[in-house]
Image (tube, rainbow, N blue to C red):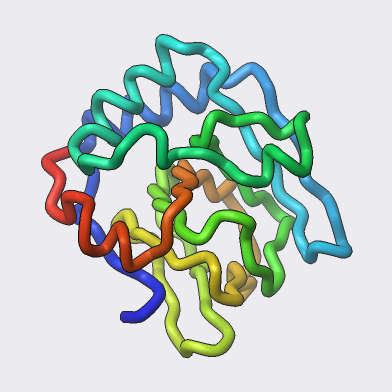
Length: 178
């Protein structure tokens, strides 16, 4: 695949930890911008102890340099400040239409149950079902499918990366024991 690099599944104990961290998030922001083709809610990890757990259990096994984790959208919307990692939630009626992100690359980990709402790339004819984490080239036009109605919230941990997809494909640990 040119835009998606599947990674090994996250251990159940770490998925439970991520769900618990999500439940502790005190700050959220509804992002409803029809001009951007998006309606979803982002939850932010403001507690430094919880953030440190993600660094220890998820980021370190990937061997990603911490100064490469940053959400470049923060420069556009200071209310969105997320230190490069947040949770994105799609519920019934939410959507992500074709768009290109500010960051070139993102790593997504689905922490909720199975979803039929896959990521799809417009020009590359690729899609991903989220059944394992994936490194994603979000500098390409992509969207989340609405092939079936969302009946349960789709909760995704997002790690925003500042370098291009090929850089991470060749430099991070692609077989983390996480």
